[in-house]
Each structure stands twice: as structure tokens, then as C-alpha cells.
Length: 279
Image (cartoon, rainbow, N blue to C red; front, top):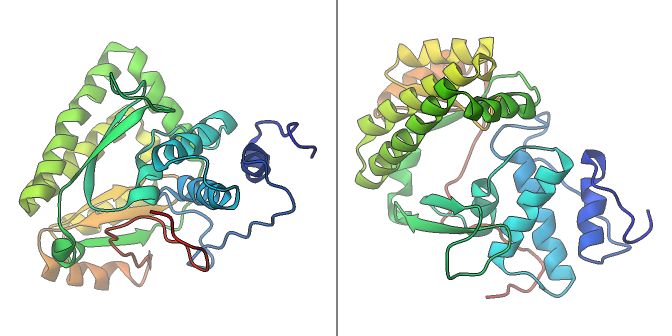
């Protein structure tokens, strides 16, 4: 490809990033931490796009700030049809932390920004991460499909009266989830997850695969709730229980059938190795 001539195409996203930052002769190798899992629904495509933008930004002498990187990575996914996305996943890669997140697509009045602006407020301090992590599991259902299919249905439902009303309920439910985390009201967290999944499924039944229904059935038997991540396409399912002891019992039921994905809660986002950090 000639510089400036790389089209917006899903298959050429890596070349497009290099083109945007004016780089040439640079090879990017991306590796999944877990072999055998191409995607997970944990914001995998957003993580990859954001990571490459961050590294390209360093190699091209840091022309963009963190908020602009978030915007750029999100726009790339949108324009190439990789995923219909906001900016919350990209923001997590850049900033990290257990925070709430409010995205203003057209920016905050009085503040300049690229593709909108965002507000983040800390919900839990790093010292409280183990308490939260003990109540969380992530399992891979073994089924992968295109998230875009479900996302398109959700977006279309914004244009019909019943779908719009359902979408509105998610704002309240997301706030209850946020408050449950902040107050460490683990039963409120569990209830809000259940309500959110119910609405998502009403909006698009294909959100839940047969494996997801099976995992949810096991969760209900162990006082837990499941939440297929993203649009449920990558296969990863987030599981939450107010009781760490019940989760250990659930592990014994799920581990023989589904693959458990280890995770870390990070107070900070991306990390460069073998490169000078910029503050």
C-alpha cells in the first residue's frame, strides 16, 4: 500500500493505523495471552486497536493525548465496520481503574475534544480490588460469532417505541450497578446484572447462545448471575456472585465444560515495556 492510499477496510485496520501515524517499515505483532482463543468479548478488538494506536503514538513522537487516542481507536473500529462501539473499552485500555464512565459523543460544552469527551470517577480504590475480584469469574463459552450482528439489532431497536423504552431502562440499571460497586452492595450488583441481561435479551434474543443459557442455569443454582460480555460474540461470559464460597462451588460445575479465563483488575491502563514512559 502507498502512504495515504490505505482504504478503510476491516481487513486492513493495522495498515490504516500505521498510515494515520505516518509510520513505515514497522512490523506490529499482536499476541493473545491465552492460546486458542481468538476473541473473547472482553473488548478484544478495542484493546488491539487502542494498543496499536498507543504504540504508534509513541513511535511517531506522541502527537495525540490519551483522550484523542481513545477517540481515534474508536473511530477506526466504527469506520471499518469491525464493531459498533462507544469509547468505554478504549478508555479502559488507556486509563484503567475500577471507575464509572460517561461518554459525551459530541463533547462537553466548553471543553474541546476529538470524538467526544468522557468523565471517569473512581468507584473502588486499589486496596479493595481483591474483595471485588473474589466475587468475579470469567469463562469462555466456546462459541464465537460476529458481535456486529447483535449490535445492529440493538441499534435498530432505538427506532421503535418498545425498543426505545427498553433501552431507556438500561440507564437506570447501569446506575444501580455502579452504585452497588461503589457501596460494595454485592446483592444490588447481582440484581442489576440480572435486569440488564433480561433487557438485552428482550432487545435481541440472539445475544444469548445455547451455551450462555446453560451457564446461566448453573449460575442460578449457585446464587450467581452471568453476563455475556460485549454483544456476546467473543464467547466470554462474566459471572458475579455476592458469595465467594458459592463461586468456588460453581467453579466445580463449570470447569469441566468451559474454559476459565484468568484476569487482573488494574488501577492503571496500558503499560509500555522497553520504552520510556511519558507522564
